[in-house]
Amino acid sequence: MAVKKGNFEIVMEKRKKELIGRIEKGEEVISKRELTILNEEDKEKYEKIIERRQGLARYYKNKEKLIKEGVIKRKRGKYLKTYVCDECGKEFKLKYLKKGNEVKFCSNECKRKYLVKLMNEARRNGFHIEKKKKSECKYRIIVTLNGKERKKLGRYFDKKSAINDYDKFIEDNKNIIVSKKYSQRNDWERKYEILLLKLNEEDLEHSKFPNEYGKLIENIVEATHDLDKTEWGNKKREIKKWIILNKQIYNYEEDYHVYGYNSFKRDGNRKNITFILDNLILNNNESKQISIYKNKLLIKDDDHIFDMIIGTNKNVIIDLYNRIEEICTKKKINYITFLGFSDGPLSSDFTEKLIQEKTGWDISKIKKCMSSN
Image (cartoon, rainbow, N blue to C red; front, side, top):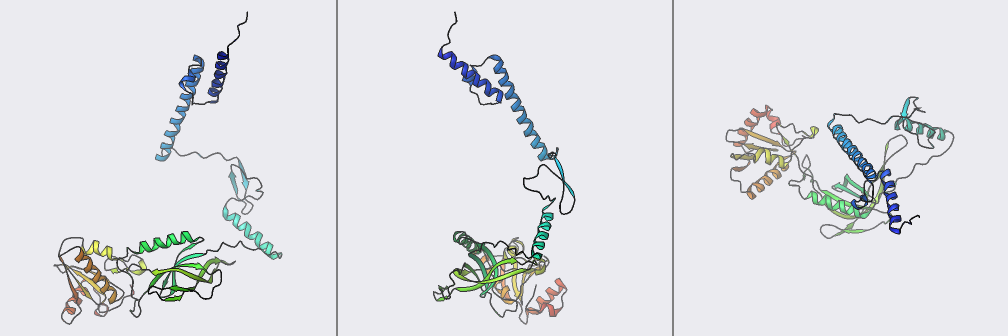
């Protein structure tokens, strides 16, 4: 007489079949409660699968370490087919070719040459090919020198990113100690300003903007728009009208030529005030005397060993001298004495001899008040 299976046994058999299917697929996530349903043979199968998986994971981890250390080289995949470049005729290998790519190229350069040939043929046949126009930038940040555009700092398509970068430029500019003020010949003062501009899309002719003194001034200016290339590869400047949204004074750090450090302008290795303080003045606690001669700052020791800093003109060196004196008084440094000008009738002969012994220059070169370097 056949014994009918109960509902519990039927459910357990279903679960056992599901678990065996999961084990054959290679699933690792099986609870301890589910393992009690399985036979010993099924449990052994499951343990072997887990051991194999763990062994493979260890192998690949060790392999990655050896590749990073340079013991093993990473093997590249085998190429399936060889193709011939339609431009240069060289053979090259690829794993696969994208659907619809009837023309084959071995490099991007060959692809560019092929497209240029097609465009030239189309123009000869009378077809007019228009280039895709770049989306116009609506906001810009520029630096002006005495009202003329000097440098471009950024181009933006939205107002938020332009304002964020404008604020960052102003915050970074606060760290400057000695700013550039004077020209080389000292005939005019440098005035740098940073401007946040918006493209004049509505073609407004007149618009007012308050300056630093509160006076309303015209805030529509002309500036270069985009630098696009022509068909022949030449740069093309387009001048458009812009509206000033914000304007502030902007400073550049003054740099100097330190004698003996190869810091001429053409080398691009000129030194600023932080280098002078850290390496020439505050590097040790020995007593020093600082004086000005023409466009040169002299830092002398008790043993008449001195360093010489050369500026573009006399006013640049006076600013540097005053700034160093302020910093020394704030830090309460007593071992440095400031002697002022040493180009008087009594002291000039002595300083000229010192400079001549150090550099070997002529007296005409020593007495110069301006320097291009």
